[in-house]
Amino acid sequence: MKSTDASIDRTKKNPYIPVLSTSADIMEITRLGDELMISDRNVWGEQYPEFFRVHEYVILFVDQGWLEGRFNLNVRTVQAPAAYVILPDHVLSLLGNSPDCRLRVLCMSASYAKELNIPFNYDFMQQLFHDPIVDMSVGWMEICNNYLDLIRNIILMPEVPDKRSMLLNLVRSLIDLLIDLYGKEQRQRPQLSRPETIARQYLALIEMHCKQHHNIEWYASEMCLTPKYIANVVKNETGKSAGYWINKNLLIYAKIMLTTTNLTIQQIGDTLGFLNQSHFGTWFRRETGVSPKVFRNL
Image (cartoon, rainbow, N blue to C red; front, top):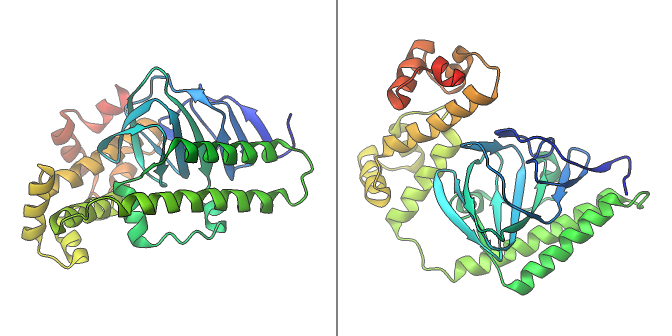
């Protein structure tokens, strides 16, 4: 069944993924234009690029087995039943899965998510950056699957009166449910120590601002702490230096742009906040052992 604003299709994978317009080969998807996408149940069994980045709000519902990936540099295993919330510009690397892994995907454009009027405050978004897994019971997962089935069926039904409003209400209700489950699960966890909180805040700020700010001093100023104090805390909590995490994030963005865009090396260096192409090239060679040009042609 198809309508003028919805279809099921298969498209090729792309390591720089706008999920609403491309998806992995294995995913049969149902979409409402360029605003809302939902996948059918599927087995996750495909090889993926080293990393990729999404541009929309994506929720992975893992209802069977487990999925392991590197999400914003942190290796996490999502064990069913659970959902994983992916925010715009998250960098992902899928590392493995159980043979029986089964998941569903709900994806929304930024403009569609805005229409939901979900009160995502800064503290909540920062928490999601570092702890984006929503654990749930089998019963709650079944309820989520019922929501997803209903959303999918309404998208595919032709001539539904006020389809858009109906879908907005359903999606909003599903996300409200996930937020409630997330909040209850978080309240049951031990409170983070002050050093743990500082380290998480520092890493969250880097993920959002590393392209503009390469120096620990800027982050220290944002957090109203001294650079030396932050450096000590981050080293103790993560085992890596504060500067390491800035370079690590920058390198991921550099590799993504070199391998998935037609931007010149100069343009990529400018986007990543380097003074000039020579400065970018020297830094990239130091981090990888090869020049940006050689890496792009590998």
